Amino acid sequence: MDRPLVVIVDADDRLRHTLKGPLAGRGFDVTEAVDGDGALRAVRARRPHLLIVGSPRDGSGDGIEIVRRVRACDRAVPIVLLAGESSEARAIDALRAGVNDYLKHPVSADQLLESVDRCLGDRRPAPTPSKGPVAVDALVDGDRMVGDSPSMRAIALQIRRLAPTDSNVLITGETGTGKELVAELLHRNSRRREGPLVCINCAAIPESLLESELFGFDRGAFTGAQAAYDGKLRLAHGGTLFFDEIGDMSLSAQAKILRVVEAKEVHRLGGTRRVALDVRIVAATNHDLEALVAQERFRRDLYFRLNVASVHLPPLRERTQDVPVLLQHYLGPLNRRLGTRITGFAPDALECLLRHAWPGNVRELKNLVEAVALSAPSGVIAHADLPAAFRRRADERVDLSRPPEAGTHERDRLLSALVSTNWNKSRAAQELHWARMTVYRKMAKYHITHGGKTPSSSADPLTPPVSDR
Image (cartoon, rainbow, N blue to C red; front, top):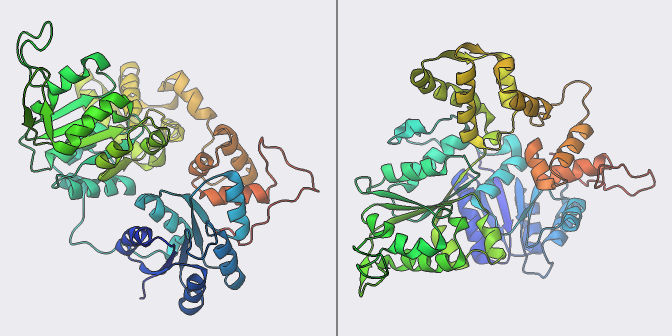
């Protein structure tokens, strides 16, 4: 069977090469074009399964004109538009032109592949068979990484691939998703496993103590320095240095850390020589560092040096199939520690737990299980045994990820998602498990404008040029 064909249209040779790698690795046949004429030739001659349009060489701006030209001869091929700027007006123009998904530069490999999967659905290639199953428990201490969802399997594969290298790794994800655990697994599965793992909480060290705490000091370097201190950076020599919450570090501190990342050496306060540092650097943050760079709150050069390789941990609400597994995982140790005999959760309680948004992620789930174990020390946990505040929040939340029940209109689900996310289209799309362009299409279909009001019949609704995919 022939591999699905993807055409990448962009004037930037490096960008086309960057996009081609993940697609080829996923099993796609990839061809390239630099302008609209090349894109049309490929569409007419080869009938591709997908078109990715960026900034073409023929001066047609952000590619919307190419989309219009392609749509004039092929209304079926899915199109992903890569835009240099993102705004609601631009997205509306893209929708009218006929794109299926809309991504803003810079785009990660994961974002690109997720978009391609959404557009192609069942037409995406089957995964290439590996030499053996990649399991979480194949990692040293891998049993601590609980979950069997596709995202957790992918993270286990990333850890196995990255751990043996000495490359810097940036771990991203919301609070409570397990970033510190990933850092530990990277260390435990590396060649540095016999060396130390030194964790530095960047948000907890006062600015006034930063240099002495991290770089160390010689005796007499300042008042009270009665003995020399190596500093946390030097303590990590031969092992792994983990900067937790790196996004909370001040700009002045970032400048000091940049030197360590670049030169791998430290200079103690009051010292006269620099000391070599043999460490592997891992950093974690719950912030969007790219946004902080754009706001000049995080150094661009430090960001690029930390982000050599990256691991993103999805929030628990995006992998709810792991919730029952996590519940059972935490029940066993709690029963032993507290002397309780909880055997599981009743269907009504489990349904409530699956509806919850889990803003605190796995950490919140673990704390909830302990709270329930303390208040209901034996048997099966029912809905009524859950904390009252938790039940209220979970029961009030509409489960937008499920298909609507009879009598529940798609328009109501969309409005609920928009209102609950303060009309943030991207977050509403995540809540509904839709592509962002699908949100715009449905808003046009149901004549929804900002604030949830329906325009009069004389209003000019947006008419999608292609059917929903």
